[in-house]
Length: 204
Image 1 (cartoon, helix red, strand yellow):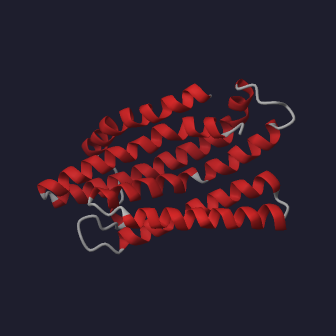
Image 2 (cartoon, one colour):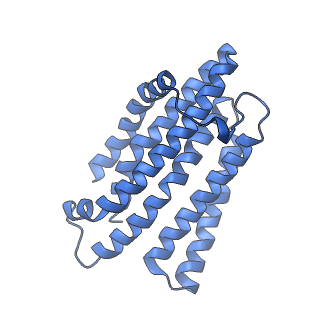
Image 3 (cartoon, one colour):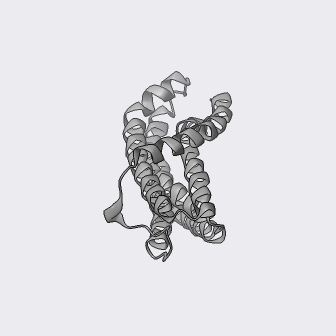
């Protein structure tokens, strides 16, 4: 309860960038520009990894100061900080899933991203019970359950993209950021991210 809105505020903007990827790839699919599809796929996934690493570092070092600014009660601030630090490890995987799912949705594939999310959600629930009830890991158990479930969703979406036979095929050797492509993703994605973040701002 003390971390949800704060986590949402920080992550919303970056998750919004996946909307930019979705729109851009769908546009190139519509025009049949397969070279740009390939560039945008690899630029998107690279941006997901870079942003994920950035969020992990920010979350690790800024968790307690941000919680203090929100006047989090002293009797739970240490547990809240622990939860947030572990949770932000999972943002790397969360962004990979969101960007990967955006790529699949751009060509009309909405079923597999939903399936992966369902598998991740069920895994999260099972691990919550295992870590908290069985292993008595308390807050850390809940956080690690979230991270592992997010990693599973990311692995599933990456596996799917690696095995695609069209222009959305993912090849880790081709990862890299194309400057103009990245700017288009940012131009479209930032307004979407800001819109999501504004709801979290109000709650914070």
